[in-house]
Length: 200
Image (cartoon, rainbow, N blue to C red; front, side, top):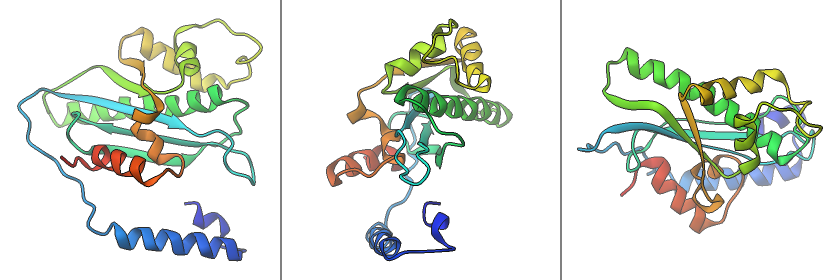
């Protein structure tokens, strides 16, 4: 999606980035999703993350999330996209990403129910690395730093209070969704690839 933003007026720098992407694709043609049989109960879990104002052109942040049915299996749903509005803080950007992850979790819960798959679906655990965004899901009080956040994102509080969604902190180095929001060193990319693709 990032390349499509420059189709009308590409620059030399865009061409260099495109060549890098093509080299990456060539080197990862063997990557594939691995779904393994397991004797343990299936449980829908997700990771949510966001960068903050990383786009130099419009300063919008990128949302990333992914969901899997067990810790050793590959992801069954994922997304990486630019947020529709500019976030004024890291906390707000992470909260908006958490909101999108919650919407996806509710959708996946319904799909699983329609397929009659036996899974532990309540509460759906969503991991993230921003304590401030988790605080916003639990405290309804407004203050100067958060009162501007659009009302649509506060629906997540309802699902947390109803025990449909549970949020939990995870260190940044263990947040798999980090791979969907920003470039990272090779060792970190390889680590997250094992989780994203379900490699042993």
